[in-house]
Amino acid sequence: MRMGITGYEPSFVFGIEAVREAYGARLAALVGRRLTGFAMVRFVEDGSWFADCPVVLDFEGVRVEVSHRQLDHFWIGWNDIDTTVPIANWEWFEFTPEWSDQDERLAPFVGRELREVALLEWSPPEEVRDTARGTVAVEFVFEDGHVRIANGLDENTVELDPAAPDYVRYRLPAPE
Image 1 (cartoon, rainbow, N blue to C red):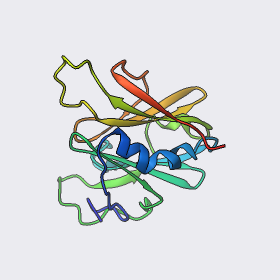
Image 2: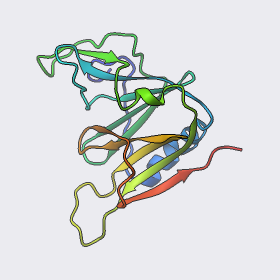
Image 3: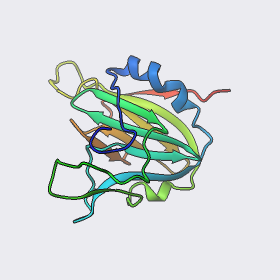
């Protein structure tokens, strides 16, 4: 148990090839499923999102748990985290964390069918010095938009806008 989260025992991988090898086939197999729910850790006191904790997406009973750490650590868990169990032994902040199914960015996608999954690698021009180079994001594409969970330099970010041109996109083909 990490961060007091039951089932959260990440084994981080590094780099686009390792991410694709470790998670690509299982991510691609989600295509055609509907997003039926999600969970994020929020603080009871003010409702703010604690972006260091995993983002959990439920695709008709298959929970995908996404977490970024440091500049290049990436992990996806599959049905490991139990969001019905309260977060225990929290010592990080004076706020109280809890699982929440409230988020204005993700809520509109609940009930929508997943059309495509892609991995994105941050790759600015070589002459640009960028500590985020090589970070990997996962993008879930729905008919009417997409959700990208990216590395916010040692935490998760949830992005809905079109991917920046410095991302190299690796579409994961759906199984036949």
